[in-house]
Image 1 (spheres, rainbow, N blue to C red):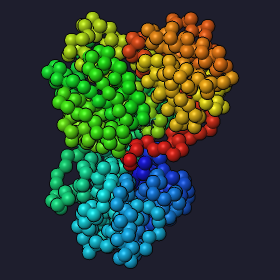
Image 2: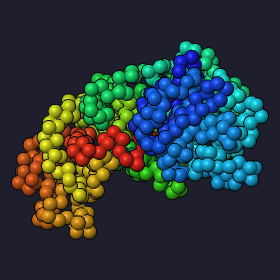
Image 3: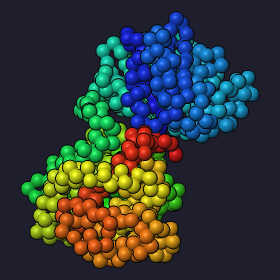
Image 4: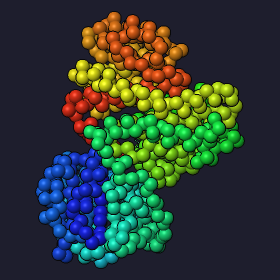
Length: 608
Ligand code: AGP
Protein backbone atom coordinates (compact mmCIF):
# COMPACT_ATOMS: atom_id res chain seq x y z
CA UNK A 1 0.00 0.00 0.00
CA UNK A 2 1.00 3.65 -0.13
CA UNK A 3 4.23 4.76 1.51
CA UNK A 4 5.10 8.01 3.28
CA UNK A 5 8.49 9.52 4.05
CA UNK A 6 9.12 12.97 5.48
CA UNK A 7 12.27 14.78 6.54
CA UNK A 8 13.14 17.99 8.31
CA UNK A 9 16.75 18.86 9.05
CA UNK A 10 19.89 20.36 7.57
CA UNK A 11 20.56 18.07 4.64
CA UNK A 12 19.13 18.31 1.13
CA UNK A 13 15.79 16.58 1.46
CA UNK A 14 14.89 15.38 -2.05
CA UNK A 15 17.54 12.63 -2.32
CA UNK A 16 16.63 11.46 1.21
CA UNK A 17 12.96 11.25 0.26
CA UNK A 18 13.70 9.38 -2.97
CA UNK A 19 15.94 6.89 -1.16
CA UNK A 20 13.35 6.42 1.57
CA UNK A 21 10.59 5.85 -0.96
CA UNK A 22 12.74 3.24 -2.71
CA UNK A 23 12.91 1.34 0.57
CA UNK A 24 9.11 1.36 0.67
CA UNK A 25 8.70 0.11 -2.91
CA UNK A 26 7.92 -3.37 -1.59
CA UNK A 27 4.63 -2.06 -0.23
CA UNK A 28 3.31 -1.75 -3.79
CA UNK A 29 2.61 1.50 -5.68
CA UNK A 30 1.79 2.90 -9.07
CA UNK A 31 2.93 6.53 -8.82
CA UNK A 32 5.05 8.73 -6.61
CA UNK A 33 5.74 12.34 -5.72
CA UNK A 34 7.46 14.71 -3.34
CA UNK A 35 6.85 18.20 -1.96
CA UNK A 36 9.81 20.28 -0.81
CA UNK A 37 9.85 23.62 0.93
CA UNK A 38 12.21 26.12 -0.69
CA UNK A 39 12.32 29.92 -1.00
CA UNK A 40 9.17 30.48 1.07
CA UNK A 41 7.21 28.03 -1.10
CA UNK A 42 6.20 24.42 -1.22
CA UNK A 43 7.13 22.89 -4.59
CA UNK A 44 5.62 19.63 -5.79
CA UNK A 45 6.81 17.14 -8.40
CA UNK A 46 4.99 13.87 -9.05
CA UNK A 47 4.86 11.17 -11.66
CA UNK A 48 2.85 8.13 -12.60
CA UNK A 49 4.80 4.88 -12.77
CA UNK A 50 7.93 3.57 -11.14
CA UNK A 51 10.06 5.69 -8.84
CA UNK A 52 12.71 5.79 -11.55
CA UNK A 53 10.40 8.14 -13.52
CA UNK A 54 10.24 10.56 -10.60
CA UNK A 55 13.93 10.10 -9.92
CA UNK A 56 14.72 11.06 -13.50
CA UNK A 57 12.41 14.06 -13.39
CA UNK A 58 14.24 15.26 -10.27
CA UNK A 59 17.74 14.36 -11.47
CA UNK A 60 18.06 12.17 -8.41
CA UNK A 61 16.75 15.02 -6.27
CA UNK A 62 19.48 17.46 -7.30
CA UNK A 63 17.15 19.87 -9.06
CA UNK A 64 14.84 20.32 -6.08
CA UNK A 65 16.67 22.18 -3.31
CA UNK A 66 15.33 22.39 0.24
CA UNK A 67 15.78 20.80 3.66
CA UNK A 68 12.18 19.94 4.56
CA UNK A 69 9.80 17.81 2.55
CA UNK A 70 7.36 14.93 2.28
CA UNK A 71 7.28 12.07 -0.21
CA UNK A 72 4.75 9.42 -1.16
CA UNK A 73 4.27 6.28 -3.18
CA UNK A 74 0.61 5.81 -4.15
CA UNK A 75 -1.32 2.57 -4.58
CA UNK A 76 -4.48 3.69 -6.36
CA UNK A 77 -7.81 3.32 -4.60
CA UNK A 78 -9.81 6.41 -5.63
CA UNK A 79 -8.96 7.39 -9.21
CA UNK A 80 -6.64 5.69 -11.68
CA UNK A 81 -2.84 5.95 -11.43
CA UNK A 82 -1.91 9.29 -13.02
CA UNK A 83 0.32 12.31 -12.42
CA UNK A 84 -2.68 14.30 -11.16
CA UNK A 85 -3.92 11.64 -8.77
CA UNK A 86 -0.45 11.12 -7.31
CA UNK A 87 0.43 12.65 -3.95
CA UNK A 88 1.36 15.13 -2.53
CA UNK A 89 -1.91 16.97 -3.00
CA UNK A 90 -2.06 20.71 -2.49
CA UNK A 91 -4.70 23.22 -1.51
CA UNK A 92 -5.92 25.46 -4.35
CA UNK A 93 -3.53 28.21 -3.28
CA UNK A 94 -0.69 25.67 -3.32
CA UNK A 95 0.29 26.78 0.17
CA UNK A 96 -0.43 23.45 1.88
CA UNK A 97 0.85 20.06 0.73
CA UNK A 98 -0.38 16.74 2.06
CA UNK A 99 0.58 13.08 1.70
CA UNK A 100 -1.93 10.49 2.85
CA UNK A 101 -2.18 6.74 3.36
CA UNK A 102 -5.59 5.24 4.02
CA UNK A 103 -9.10 6.01 2.86
CA UNK A 104 -11.29 8.99 3.72
CA UNK A 105 -14.71 7.40 3.86
CA UNK A 106 -16.78 10.61 3.89
CA UNK A 107 -14.80 12.23 1.10
CA UNK A 108 -17.82 12.62 -1.18
CA UNK A 109 -19.80 14.72 1.28
CA UNK A 110 -16.66 16.71 2.13
CA UNK A 111 -15.99 17.26 -1.56
CA UNK A 112 -19.51 18.62 -1.98
CA UNK A 113 -19.11 20.83 1.08
CA UNK A 114 -15.76 22.21 -0.09
CA UNK A 115 -16.94 22.71 -3.68
CA UNK A 116 -19.77 24.78 -2.23
CA UNK A 117 -17.12 26.91 -0.54
CA UNK A 118 -15.42 27.53 -3.88
CA UNK A 119 -12.66 24.91 -3.77
CA UNK A 120 -11.84 23.47 -7.20
CA UNK A 121 -10.84 19.80 -7.30
CA UNK A 122 -8.25 18.66 -9.80
CA UNK A 123 -7.96 14.96 -8.94
CA UNK A 124 -10.29 12.00 -8.38
CA UNK A 125 -8.75 11.15 -5.03
CA UNK A 126 -10.21 11.14 -1.56
CA UNK A 127 -6.96 12.74 -0.32
CA UNK A 128 -7.53 16.03 -2.08
CA UNK A 129 -10.34 16.86 0.38
CA UNK A 130 -7.73 16.85 3.15
CA UNK A 131 -5.62 19.45 1.37
CA UNK A 132 -8.63 21.73 0.83
CA UNK A 133 -10.11 21.09 4.26
CA UNK A 134 -6.77 21.99 5.84
CA UNK A 135 -6.76 25.19 3.84
CA UNK A 136 -10.38 25.87 4.86
CA UNK A 137 -9.65 25.60 8.59
CA UNK A 138 -6.18 27.14 8.47
CA UNK A 139 -5.93 30.40 10.38
CA UNK A 140 -2.20 30.36 11.03
CA UNK A 141 -1.95 27.46 13.51
CA UNK A 142 -1.16 24.18 11.79
CA UNK A 143 -1.69 21.89 14.79
CA UNK A 144 -5.08 23.38 15.58
CA UNK A 145 -6.01 23.06 11.91
CA UNK A 146 -5.06 19.40 11.71
CA UNK A 147 -7.07 18.62 14.84
CA UNK A 148 -10.10 20.25 13.22
CA UNK A 149 -9.51 18.20 10.07
CA UNK A 150 -9.27 15.02 12.16
CA UNK A 151 -12.58 15.81 13.81
CA UNK A 152 -14.20 16.20 10.43
CA UNK A 153 -12.88 13.28 8.40
CA UNK A 154 -13.98 9.65 8.76
CA UNK A 155 -11.86 6.70 7.76
CA UNK A 156 -8.21 5.79 8.03
CA UNK A 157 -5.25 8.04 7.57
CA UNK A 158 -1.58 8.62 8.08
CA UNK A 159 -0.80 12.19 7.06
CA UNK A 160 2.26 14.33 6.53
CA UNK A 161 1.58 18.05 6.08
CA UNK A 162 3.80 21.00 5.22
CA UNK A 163 2.85 24.61 4.61
CA UNK A 164 4.37 27.71 2.96
CA UNK A 165 4.06 29.63 6.23
CA UNK A 166 6.23 27.19 8.21
CA UNK A 167 9.74 26.78 6.80
CA UNK A 168 10.80 24.74 9.83
CA UNK A 169 7.77 22.73 10.88
CA UNK A 170 6.05 19.60 9.67
CA UNK A 171 2.89 18.04 11.09
CA UNK A 172 1.98 14.37 11.02
CA UNK A 173 -0.86 12.28 12.38
CA UNK A 174 -2.26 8.79 12.12
CA UNK A 175 -5.48 6.87 12.57
CA UNK A 176 -5.74 3.21 11.55
CA UNK A 177 -2.82 3.53 9.18
CA UNK A 178 0.79 3.05 10.28
CA UNK A 179 3.17 5.97 10.82
CA UNK A 180 6.38 6.24 12.77
CA UNK A 181 8.62 9.15 13.74
CA UNK A 182 12.39 8.77 13.37
CA UNK A 183 14.61 10.76 15.73
CA UNK A 184 17.98 12.06 14.59
CA UNK A 185 20.51 14.70 15.56
CA UNK A 186 19.36 18.05 14.17
CA UNK A 187 16.97 16.13 11.92
CA UNK A 188 13.77 14.16 12.26
CA UNK A 189 11.71 11.88 10.02
CA UNK A 190 8.30 10.42 9.47
CA UNK A 191 7.69 7.17 7.60
CA UNK A 192 5.11 4.47 7.12
CA UNK A 193 7.64 1.80 7.89
CA UNK A 194 11.06 1.40 9.47
CA UNK A 195 13.16 0.44 6.40
CA UNK A 196 12.52 3.90 4.90
CA UNK A 197 14.58 5.63 7.59
CA UNK A 198 16.71 2.88 9.07
CA UNK A 199 19.90 4.07 7.46
CA UNK A 200 19.48 7.38 9.32
CA UNK A 201 18.21 6.35 12.74
CA UNK A 202 17.21 3.44 14.95
CA UNK A 203 15.36 5.58 17.49
CA UNK A 204 11.70 5.88 16.74
CA UNK A 205 8.33 6.75 18.18
CA UNK A 206 5.52 4.35 17.30
CA UNK A 207 2.52 6.63 16.94
CA UNK A 208 -0.85 5.69 18.36
CA UNK A 209 -4.15 6.59 16.74
CA UNK A 210 -5.01 10.27 16.79
CA UNK A 211 -1.63 11.41 18.07
CA UNK A 212 -0.54 14.64 16.44
CA UNK A 213 3.16 15.22 15.88
CA UNK A 214 4.94 18.48 15.40
CA UNK A 215 8.41 18.01 13.94
CA UNK A 216 11.15 20.59 13.91
CA UNK A 217 14.73 19.80 13.04
CA UNK A 218 15.80 19.86 16.69
CA UNK A 219 12.66 18.60 18.42
CA UNK A 220 9.56 16.46 18.16
CA UNK A 221 6.42 17.23 20.16
CA UNK A 222 3.46 14.90 20.38
CA UNK A 223 -0.07 15.95 21.31
CA UNK A 224 -3.35 14.19 21.86
CA UNK A 225 -6.49 15.30 20.08
CA UNK A 226 -7.17 17.79 22.90
CA UNK A 227 -3.79 19.34 22.18
CA UNK A 228 -2.26 18.22 25.43
CA UNK A 229 1.39 17.35 25.04
CA UNK A 230 2.17 13.70 25.73
CA UNK A 231 5.42 11.85 26.42
CA UNK A 232 6.26 8.66 24.57
CA UNK A 233 8.87 6.02 24.98
CA UNK A 234 11.57 5.83 22.35
CA UNK A 235 11.62 2.44 20.65
CA UNK A 236 14.99 1.17 19.46
CA UNK A 237 15.06 -0.88 16.29
CA UNK A 238 17.31 -3.87 16.82
CA UNK A 239 17.65 -5.17 13.29
CA UNK A 240 20.24 -3.77 10.96
CA UNK A 241 20.09 -2.15 7.54
CA UNK A 242 21.43 -5.31 5.89
CA UNK A 243 18.41 -7.33 6.97
CA UNK A 244 16.19 -4.98 4.98
CA UNK A 245 18.43 -5.20 1.91
CA UNK A 246 19.01 -7.89 -0.69
CA UNK A 247 22.51 -8.78 0.44
CA UNK A 248 23.67 -10.24 -2.87
CA UNK A 249 20.48 -12.14 -3.68
CA UNK A 250 18.72 -11.36 -6.91
CA UNK A 251 15.37 -11.00 -5.17
CA UNK A 252 14.15 -10.42 -1.64
CA UNK A 253 11.96 -13.49 -1.99
CA UNK A 254 14.98 -15.76 -2.53
CA UNK A 255 16.80 -14.10 0.33
CA UNK A 256 13.82 -14.56 2.61
CA UNK A 257 13.26 -18.19 1.63
CA UNK A 258 16.93 -18.83 2.36
CA UNK A 259 16.61 -17.17 5.75
CA UNK A 260 13.92 -19.60 6.86
CA UNK A 261 16.16 -22.00 8.81
CA UNK A 262 17.41 -19.11 10.92
CA UNK A 263 14.01 -17.46 11.26
CA UNK A 264 12.42 -20.73 12.42
CA UNK A 265 15.30 -21.37 14.80
CA UNK A 266 14.93 -17.86 16.27
CA UNK A 267 11.19 -18.36 16.70
CA UNK A 268 11.34 -21.83 18.22
CA UNK A 269 14.57 -22.42 20.10
CA UNK A 270 14.46 -19.63 22.72
CA UNK A 271 11.00 -20.94 23.66
CA UNK A 272 12.15 -24.47 24.35
CA UNK A 273 13.85 -25.10 27.67
CA UNK A 274 14.73 -28.55 29.00
CA UNK A 275 12.42 -30.14 26.47
CA UNK A 276 9.53 -27.93 27.47
CA UNK A 277 7.74 -25.16 25.64
CA UNK A 278 8.13 -21.99 27.69
CA UNK A 279 6.10 -19.09 26.37
CA UNK A 280 7.32 -16.55 28.87
CA UNK A 281 6.36 -13.66 26.59
CA UNK A 282 2.66 -14.49 26.93
CA UNK A 283 0.43 -14.88 29.88
CA UNK A 284 -1.30 -18.22 29.31
CA UNK A 285 -1.31 -20.17 32.56
CA UNK A 286 -2.72 -23.63 33.14
CA UNK A 287 -5.90 -22.05 34.53
CA UNK A 288 -6.19 -19.73 31.50
CA UNK A 289 -5.81 -22.65 29.11
CA UNK A 290 -8.35 -24.76 31.01
CA UNK A 291 -10.84 -21.90 30.80
CA UNK A 292 -10.67 -21.75 27.00
CA UNK A 293 -13.77 -23.31 25.50
CA UNK A 294 -13.35 -22.18 21.95
CA UNK A 295 -10.72 -20.53 19.78
CA UNK A 296 -11.13 -18.38 16.71
CA UNK A 297 -8.07 -17.89 14.55
CA UNK A 298 -8.49 -14.79 12.42
CA UNK A 299 -6.18 -13.56 9.65
CA UNK A 300 -5.85 -12.80 5.94
CA UNK A 301 -4.05 -14.49 3.04
CA UNK A 302 -0.97 -16.44 3.95
CA UNK A 303 -1.46 -15.74 7.64
CA UNK A 304 -4.93 -17.31 7.32
CA UNK A 305 -3.32 -20.38 5.79
CA UNK A 306 -1.03 -20.57 8.81
CA UNK A 307 -4.18 -20.40 10.93
CA UNK A 308 -5.62 -23.46 9.17
CA UNK A 309 -2.56 -25.47 10.13
CA UNK A 310 -2.80 -23.99 13.63
CA UNK A 311 -6.36 -25.31 13.92
CA UNK A 312 -5.25 -28.85 13.09
CA UNK A 313 -2.40 -28.64 15.59
CA UNK A 314 -4.49 -27.15 18.43
CA UNK A 315 -7.41 -29.51 17.93
CA UNK A 316 -5.13 -32.50 17.77
CA UNK A 317 -2.90 -31.64 20.72
CA UNK A 318 -5.14 -29.60 23.02
CA UNK A 319 -8.60 -30.80 21.95
CA UNK A 320 -10.03 -27.30 21.95
CA UNK A 321 -12.46 -26.58 19.09
CA UNK A 322 -11.04 -24.01 16.68
CA UNK A 323 -12.73 -21.99 13.96
CA UNK A 324 -10.52 -20.26 11.40
CA UNK A 325 -11.93 -17.11 9.89
CA UNK A 326 -10.92 -14.67 7.21
CA UNK A 327 -10.65 -11.31 8.94
CA UNK A 328 -12.69 -9.58 6.23
CA UNK A 329 -15.58 -11.99 6.93
CA UNK A 330 -15.22 -12.26 10.68
CA UNK A 331 -15.48 -8.53 11.24
CA UNK A 332 -18.93 -8.36 9.66
CA UNK A 333 -20.41 -11.73 10.49
CA UNK A 334 -21.62 -11.10 14.00
CA UNK A 335 -19.32 -13.74 15.55
CA UNK A 336 -20.48 -15.50 18.69
CA UNK A 337 -18.03 -14.67 21.44
CA UNK A 338 -18.88 -16.15 24.79
CA UNK A 339 -16.97 -16.48 28.00
CA UNK A 340 -13.99 -18.70 27.42
CA UNK A 341 -13.43 -17.60 23.83
CA UNK A 342 -9.85 -16.90 22.84
CA UNK A 343 -9.15 -15.10 19.57
CA UNK A 344 -5.78 -15.72 17.96
CA UNK A 345 -4.87 -13.08 15.42
CA UNK A 346 -2.08 -13.86 12.94
CA UNK A 347 -0.35 -11.14 10.95
CA UNK A 348 3.13 -10.56 9.60
CA UNK A 349 2.84 -6.78 9.34
CA UNK A 350 0.54 -6.28 12.31
CA UNK A 351 -1.13 -3.53 10.28
CA UNK A 352 -3.54 -5.35 7.94
CA UNK A 353 -6.72 -3.27 8.03
CA UNK A 354 -9.22 -6.15 8.04
CA UNK A 355 -7.26 -8.09 10.64
CA UNK A 356 -6.96 -5.07 12.90
CA UNK A 357 -10.69 -4.38 12.55
CA UNK A 358 -11.47 -8.03 13.34
CA UNK A 359 -9.29 -7.80 16.45
CA UNK A 360 -11.17 -4.70 17.60
CA UNK A 361 -14.53 -6.35 16.93
CA UNK A 362 -13.52 -9.41 18.95
CA UNK A 363 -12.22 -7.27 21.78
CA UNK A 364 -15.41 -5.22 21.83
CA UNK A 365 -17.32 -8.47 22.26
CA UNK A 366 -15.18 -9.44 25.24
CA UNK A 367 -12.71 -11.90 23.74
CA UNK A 368 -9.15 -12.22 24.97
CA UNK A 369 -6.70 -11.60 22.14
CA UNK A 370 -3.48 -13.49 21.57
CA UNK A 371 -1.67 -12.35 18.48
CA UNK A 372 1.10 -13.91 16.46
CA UNK A 373 2.85 -10.99 14.84
CA UNK A 374 6.18 -10.34 13.14
CA UNK A 375 6.52 -6.56 13.26
CA UNK A 376 7.37 -5.46 16.78
CA UNK A 377 5.30 -2.55 18.02
CA UNK A 378 2.76 -2.78 15.18
CA UNK A 379 -0.88 -1.84 15.80
CA UNK A 380 -2.07 -5.44 16.18
CA UNK A 381 0.74 -6.19 18.62
CA UNK A 382 -0.09 -3.13 20.67
CA UNK A 383 -3.81 -3.78 20.83
CA UNK A 384 -3.58 -7.46 21.81
CA UNK A 385 -3.68 -8.83 25.34
CA UNK A 386 -0.75 -11.11 24.53
CA UNK A 387 1.72 -11.19 21.66
CA UNK A 388 3.85 -14.08 20.56
CA UNK A 389 6.33 -12.57 18.15
CA UNK A 390 7.64 -14.50 15.18
CA UNK A 391 11.30 -13.63 14.87
CA UNK A 392 11.44 -13.68 11.08
CA UNK A 393 13.07 -10.24 10.73
CA UNK A 394 11.87 -7.82 8.07
CA UNK A 395 9.99 -9.45 5.21
CA UNK A 396 10.12 -7.24 2.15
CA UNK A 397 8.96 -9.42 -0.78
CA UNK A 398 5.21 -9.20 -1.25
CA UNK A 399 5.02 -12.99 -1.33
CA UNK A 400 5.23 -14.11 2.24
CA UNK A 401 7.62 -16.99 2.91
CA UNK A 402 9.60 -16.80 6.13
CA UNK A 403 6.68 -15.08 7.84
CA UNK A 404 4.50 -18.12 7.03
CA UNK A 405 6.96 -20.75 8.25
CA UNK A 406 7.58 -18.83 11.45
CA UNK A 407 3.82 -18.40 11.94
CA UNK A 408 3.49 -22.17 11.61
CA UNK A 409 6.30 -22.60 14.14
CA UNK A 410 4.54 -20.26 16.56
CA UNK A 411 1.25 -22.11 16.11
CA UNK A 412 2.95 -25.44 16.84
CA UNK A 413 4.39 -23.97 20.03
CA UNK A 414 1.00 -22.63 21.12
CA UNK A 415 -0.71 -25.95 20.34
CA UNK A 416 1.88 -27.98 22.21
CA UNK A 417 1.87 -25.58 25.15
CA UNK A 418 -1.92 -25.89 25.40
CA UNK A 419 -1.84 -29.66 24.91
CA UNK A 420 0.65 -30.12 27.74
CA UNK A 421 -1.24 -27.74 30.03
CA UNK A 422 -4.46 -29.63 29.39
CA UNK A 423 -2.59 -32.90 29.93
CA UNK A 424 -3.69 -34.33 26.63
CA UNK A 425 -0.10 -34.71 25.49
CA UNK A 426 1.90 -37.25 27.45
CA UNK A 427 5.44 -36.29 28.50
CA UNK A 428 7.01 -38.78 26.12
CA UNK A 429 4.94 -37.57 23.15
CA UNK A 430 5.79 -33.96 23.97
CA UNK A 431 9.48 -34.89 23.98
CA UNK A 432 9.18 -36.47 20.55
CA UNK A 433 7.34 -33.46 19.09
CA UNK A 434 9.91 -31.10 20.60
CA UNK A 435 12.87 -33.00 19.18
CA UNK A 436 11.14 -33.02 15.81
CA UNK A 437 10.55 -29.28 16.10
CA UNK A 438 14.19 -28.68 16.97
CA UNK A 439 15.24 -30.49 13.81
CA UNK A 440 12.95 -28.47 11.52
CA UNK A 441 15.47 -25.68 10.70
CA UNK A 442 18.06 -28.20 9.44
CA UNK A 443 15.44 -30.04 7.45
CA UNK A 444 14.29 -26.80 5.81
CA UNK A 445 17.94 -26.16 4.97
CA UNK A 446 18.19 -29.57 3.27
CA UNK A 447 15.17 -28.79 1.10
CA UNK A 448 16.65 -25.42 0.16
CA UNK A 449 19.83 -27.17 -0.90
CA UNK A 450 17.89 -29.18 -3.47
CA UNK A 451 16.52 -26.03 -5.08
CA UNK A 452 18.19 -26.85 -8.42
CA UNK A 453 15.76 -29.79 -8.91
CA UNK A 454 12.81 -27.50 -8.37
CA UNK A 455 14.31 -24.88 -10.67
CA UNK A 456 14.65 -27.55 -13.37
CA UNK A 457 11.04 -28.64 -12.90
CA UNK A 458 9.88 -25.01 -13.04
CA UNK A 459 11.83 -24.43 -16.26
CA UNK A 460 9.77 -27.21 -17.88
CA UNK A 461 6.39 -26.05 -16.59
CA UNK A 462 6.45 -22.26 -16.40
CA UNK A 463 4.11 -22.07 -19.38
CA UNK A 464 1.32 -23.96 -17.60
CA UNK A 465 -2.08 -22.32 -18.00
CA UNK A 466 -3.66 -23.89 -14.94
CA UNK A 467 -2.12 -25.67 -11.99
CA UNK A 468 -4.02 -27.71 -9.42
CA UNK A 469 -2.66 -28.30 -5.94
CA UNK A 470 -4.18 -31.31 -4.21
CA UNK A 471 -3.89 -32.45 -0.63
CA UNK A 472 -5.75 -34.00 2.24
CA UNK A 473 -5.80 -32.88 5.84
CA UNK A 474 -2.86 -30.66 6.62
CA UNK A 475 -1.57 -31.12 3.09
CA UNK A 476 -4.71 -29.41 1.84
CA UNK A 477 -3.92 -26.37 4.02
CA UNK A 478 -0.41 -26.22 2.59
CA UNK A 479 -1.78 -26.72 -0.93
CA UNK A 480 -3.72 -23.47 -0.47
CA UNK A 481 -0.54 -21.63 0.41
CA UNK A 482 1.33 -23.17 -2.54
CA UNK A 483 -1.46 -22.14 -4.89
CA UNK A 484 -1.58 -18.58 -3.53
CA UNK A 485 2.20 -18.25 -3.90
CA UNK A 486 2.06 -19.35 -7.54
CA UNK A 487 -0.89 -17.10 -8.39
CA UNK A 488 0.48 -13.96 -6.81
CA UNK A 489 3.95 -13.96 -8.35
CA UNK A 490 3.57 -15.86 -11.64
CA UNK A 491 -0.02 -14.88 -12.56
CA UNK A 492 -0.82 -18.49 -13.45
CA UNK A 493 -4.32 -19.56 -12.60
CA UNK A 494 -4.21 -22.20 -9.93
CA UNK A 495 -6.52 -23.84 -7.46
CA UNK A 496 -6.01 -25.75 -4.28
CA UNK A 497 -8.38 -28.61 -3.79
CA UNK A 498 -9.11 -31.05 -1.02
CA UNK A 499 -8.18 -34.15 -3.01
CA UNK A 500 -11.29 -36.07 -2.00
CA UNK A 501 -13.53 -33.26 -3.19
CA UNK A 502 -12.12 -33.13 -6.71
CA UNK A 503 -14.52 -35.67 -8.14
CA UNK A 504 -17.48 -33.57 -7.06
CA UNK A 505 -16.97 -31.18 -9.95
CA UNK A 506 -13.49 -29.82 -10.45
CA UNK A 507 -12.06 -32.96 -12.00
CA UNK A 508 -13.93 -31.87 -15.15
CA UNK A 509 -11.14 -29.31 -15.62
CA UNK A 510 -8.36 -31.87 -15.71
CA UNK A 511 -7.28 -32.63 -19.27
CA UNK A 512 -4.27 -33.87 -21.19
CA UNK A 513 -1.18 -32.10 -19.85
CA UNK A 514 -2.79 -30.26 -16.87
CA UNK A 515 -0.18 -29.82 -14.15
CA UNK A 516 -1.21 -31.25 -10.78
CA UNK A 517 0.92 -30.89 -7.68
CA UNK A 518 -0.13 -33.53 -5.18
CA UNK A 519 0.96 -33.31 -1.57
CA UNK A 520 1.27 -36.72 0.04
CA UNK A 521 2.99 -36.20 3.37
CA UNK A 522 0.24 -37.39 5.71
CA UNK A 523 0.93 -41.04 6.49
CA UNK A 524 -2.64 -41.87 7.50
CA UNK A 525 -3.96 -40.44 4.24
CA UNK A 526 -1.23 -41.71 1.95
CA UNK A 527 -3.30 -44.43 0.20
CA UNK A 528 -6.15 -42.01 -0.29
CA UNK A 529 -4.03 -39.42 -2.05
CA UNK A 530 -2.46 -42.18 -4.19
CA UNK A 531 -5.96 -42.98 -5.46
CA UNK A 532 -6.55 -39.30 -6.20
CA UNK A 533 -3.30 -39.16 -8.16
CA UNK A 534 -4.48 -42.16 -10.19
CA UNK A 535 -7.77 -40.39 -10.90
CA UNK A 536 -6.11 -37.30 -12.36
CA UNK A 537 -3.45 -39.34 -14.19
CA UNK A 538 -6.25 -41.28 -15.88
CA UNK A 539 -7.48 -37.95 -17.28
CA UNK A 540 -4.10 -36.95 -18.67
CA UNK A 541 -2.65 -34.84 -15.83
CA UNK A 542 1.08 -34.48 -15.32
CA UNK A 543 1.69 -35.03 -11.61
CA UNK A 544 4.41 -33.74 -9.34
CA UNK A 545 4.08 -35.38 -5.94
CA UNK A 546 5.64 -34.25 -2.69
CA UNK A 547 6.09 -36.99 -0.13
CA UNK A 548 8.09 -37.79 2.97
CA UNK A 549 11.37 -39.63 2.37
CA UNK A 550 10.93 -43.38 2.25
CA UNK A 551 7.53 -43.35 0.56
CA UNK A 552 8.96 -44.53 -2.73
CA UNK A 553 5.81 -46.33 -3.81
CA UNK A 554 4.52 -42.94 -4.96
CA UNK A 555 7.03 -43.04 -7.82
CA UNK A 556 4.80 -45.63 -9.51
CA UNK A 557 1.94 -43.16 -9.75
CA UNK A 558 3.43 -39.68 -10.10
CA UNK A 559 5.53 -38.36 -13.01
CA UNK A 560 7.93 -36.55 -10.69
CA UNK A 561 8.47 -36.83 -6.97
CA UNK A 562 10.14 -34.52 -4.52
CA UNK A 563 10.88 -35.77 -1.06
CA UNK A 564 10.89 -33.84 2.17
CA UNK A 565 12.85 -35.15 5.18
CA UNK A 566 10.79 -37.33 7.48
CA UNK A 567 9.08 -35.73 10.45
CA UNK A 568 5.95 -35.96 12.60
CA UNK A 569 2.95 -35.65 10.20
CA UNK A 570 1.72 -32.73 12.31
CA UNK A 571 4.85 -30.73 11.47
CA UNK A 572 5.16 -31.47 7.77
CA UNK A 573 3.48 -28.18 6.74
CA UNK A 574 6.59 -26.17 7.53
CA UNK A 575 8.65 -28.44 5.25
CA UNK A 576 6.15 -29.14 2.46
CA UNK A 577 5.64 -25.49 1.73
CA UNK A 578 9.31 -24.87 0.93
CA UNK A 579 9.41 -26.67 -2.45
CA UNK A 580 6.13 -24.93 -3.29
CA UNK A 581 7.63 -21.52 -2.50
CA UNK A 582 10.66 -22.37 -4.62
CA UNK A 583 8.48 -23.59 -7.47
CA UNK A 584 6.46 -20.35 -7.50
CA UNK A 585 9.68 -18.34 -7.36
CA UNK A 586 11.38 -20.10 -10.27
CA UNK A 587 8.23 -20.01 -12.42
CA UNK A 588 7.97 -16.28 -11.79
CA UNK A 589 11.64 -15.77 -12.72
CA UNK A 590 11.26 -17.89 -15.90
CA UNK A 591 8.23 -15.82 -16.90
CA UNK A 592 10.11 -12.57 -16.32
CA UNK A 593 7.61 -11.37 -13.70
CA UNK A 594 8.41 -8.82 -11.04
CA UNK A 595 9.01 -11.40 -8.29
CA UNK A 596 9.19 -9.06 -5.31
CA UNK A 597 6.57 -6.57 -6.41
CA UNK A 598 3.86 -8.47 -8.27
CA UNK A 599 1.25 -6.47 -10.14
CA UNK A 600 -1.77 -5.10 -8.26
CA UNK A 601 -0.46 -6.26 -4.89
CA UNK A 602 0.79 -4.50 -1.81
CA UNK A 603 2.88 -5.92 1.01
CA UNK A 604 0.88 -4.47 3.79
CA UNK A 605 -2.83 -4.10 3.07
CA UNK A 606 -3.70 -1.14 5.25
CA UNK A 607 -7.00 -0.29 3.59
CA UNK A 608 -10.14 -2.36 3.61
C1 AGP B 1 1.09 -13.44 1.06
O1 AGP B 1 2.05 -13.84 0.17
C2 AGP B 1 0.39 -12.23 0.84
N1 AGP B 1 1.06 -11.29 0.13
C3 AGP B 1 -0.78 -11.87 1.71
O2 AGP B 1 -1.73 -12.88 1.54
C4 AGP B 1 -0.57 -11.60 3.23
O3 AGP B 1 -0.24 -12.78 3.87
C5 AGP B 1 -1.86 -10.98 3.81
O4 AGP B 1 -2.11 -9.77 3.17
C6 AGP B 1 -1.82 -10.80 5.30
O5 AGP B 1 -0.81 -9.91 5.67
P1 AGP B 1 -0.33 -9.78 7.17
O6 AGP B 1 0.24 -11.11 7.55
O7 AGP B 1 0.69 -8.70 7.15
O8 AGP B 1 -1.53 -9.46 7.98
